[in-house]
Length: 138
Image (cartoon, rainbow, N blue to C red):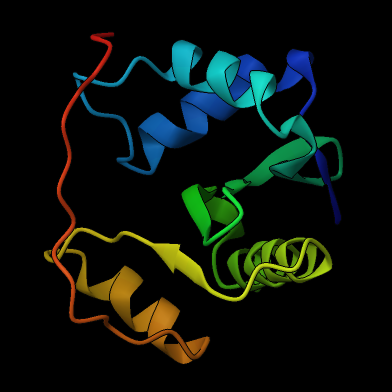
């Protein structure tokens, strides 16, 4: 198992994994999301490869105040092998190296399994409500 930065050749497998994991939404174009990430801190777009196959992803960012993780996904056959944990620990390590004091992430409130996963890693719910406004339509 190897965690490395995203490569252009990973695109189709990454999008297929995000689709399989239920992370895609009609209002987000995954190809545009990838291109946007490659324009900002591309080294923080992580993929996990196992025996030449894509096993997981994590899109990490740091704005100078907080770190964020998006698109954490693990392929169904690879679940239960601590790949999600390894991706999160690598994300944390990369953010600490950049001086990031806190990592935030968003999980849909209905996704109880994923909430339990993050809680097992020491993440707690913040007393905050995420708000959003689309600036550029996909």
